[in-house]
Structure formats: C-alpha cells, structure tokens
Length: 259
Image (cartoon, rainbow, N blue to C red; front, side):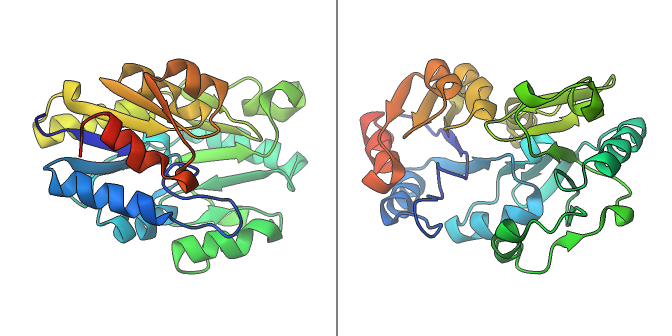
C-alpha cells in the first residue's frame, strides 16, 4: 500500500472521555506504527487551534485541520483561516445578550463567553495551556460561535442559530449548535491541505465519531467510524471499529492493511 494521509478526529477518536480524559496507549502505538509504515497521520477536528495544538504535539502531528475546517495547518504552517462575516458577529452578540449562559465564540487563541462554564473551564485551560477564557466584550472576530442547545430545541428568538445569515453554515451537534463560515468543513479543509502538500485526495483515509465527521467519512477513500459513534458517522463510514479504549484505532489500522 502506498503512502496514505490519515485524518483523525480528536474527541472520542484520539482522546477518550471515559473517566479522566486520556489517550489510550493502543492509539499512540497505532500512530507510531502508521508513521513507521510510511503513512502520514493528521488531525481533522472541530476544536479551535488553541485547543488542538497540545494534542497534536503529543502525537508529533503537524498537519492539522481545526475549527471544523476554518483553520488549516500544513507542516505546522497556517495556510488558511476563515472568519465569520462581520454581520454574523453582530447578530451573534444580539443572541448572546439574550442567552448569556448558553453562548460562546472562539478565535485562534481564546474562548469568549460571559457565562462561567465552570465544568469546562479547567479542562479547556488544560488543553490550551493557559487561561483561554475572555469576556464577550473582547470579541472582535470569530472562527466559530456556539449556543449550548441542540437545534431541535431552538426557535426564532435564538437568531443566527435558527436562521443563519448568508455565508454562514450551521453544524447540528448532539448537545449544541455551531455557526461557522459556509465553506468551512473538515472535508474542505482536508482538500486545501492535500493541494498544499501536492498530494491526491484519493489517498485520504478518515476516522471520526460525530455528526460533523460524516462528510469526511463518506467522501474519503475509506472512512472509519469509531466506537459508540453517531448514527450519521456510522451510516457514512465504510468500516466501524471498536471503542478506542478497547484498541479500536489499532485494530482498524491492522484491518485496513495500513500497518
């Protein structure tokens, strides 16, 4: 098998959230063996870059699609950033003023929120490596905005998260709704990176578990849904592997003949 570019989601794909968040040893072994077999491990995540880089460094990965495709790094060098349109930010601020405990936004370095988000603060700060929280009044641009409600529970009072303005894409996740630039998807970010690297898209293999992974699982040459995945991911995938704490990533790489 020739060189493949293998893109992994992070949460519940590289990092397990069973108990204390951790990287299963078998997953580290899989990444090392992929690299030793001549393949290129990469990341494709919905996390913003400041919540991604420490994870990437732990695997020695420098090809990274983050912010759901709004930020792309090839060989550690940023090659793409897509911000939400200014009018979207103004509309987001209106929604945030009505629902301060449910709304947040991110750029490349900070998470902006007026709510305490205490259950998440320690974890996000540990992932960033610094205090990454800032008040919404400091927000001047954003790659993504969130409301911590599933889309089925939203109505017209939730503004852009119910009726997005032109140029804005909504990602409907399990427990929240996300707004980002209309062209920003993990798959589009992977395409940008592959062109930058001079590689062909047919050599891409993807691993993921969530609704926002479905497109990259469906459109990659091989898509692997991981563990207890969403219905969207499972239906889009060519193969479903075991949970990562049971060695699913390592098993899948062997099954596919990558290692």
